[in-house]
Length: 125
Image (tube, rainbow, N blue to C red; front, side):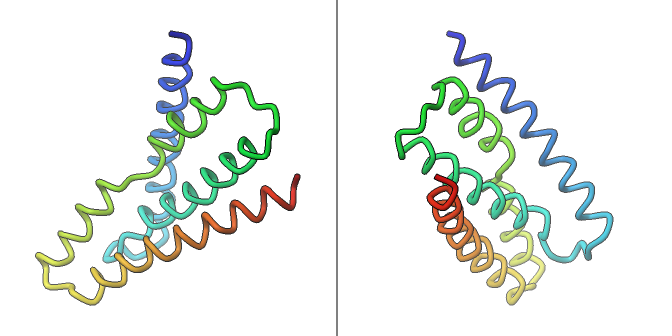
C-alpha cells in the first residue's frame, strides 16, 4: 500500500516537470513542431533505461524508489498519448513531412537515448 503513495508522489512531480519543460521549450522554440514532447520522451527513455540498468546490475535499490522513479515520475513525465495526438494533428494539417520527422525522431532518438542510458549506467557501475 505504501507503494501507491510513492507512485502518486512521483507522478505528481513528473507531471509538473513535464509542464515546466513544455513551458520552457515553447517559450523559446517554434511551436510548429512538437519539440517539448520529443524532449520529454528522449529524456525519459534515457532516465528509465539508466535506472533500470542500475537496478538490474544488482545495485541495492529500495523497491518503492523504483516505483517512484519509473512508474510515477517517468510515467507522468513522458507522453506517448501527446506524441500521438501531435502527430495526427500534423497529418490533419497536411504537415506530412513534419509528421514523419516527428515519428522517426521520437522513436529513433528515444531508442538511442535508452541505449545511452544503459551505457551510462554500466560506466557508472
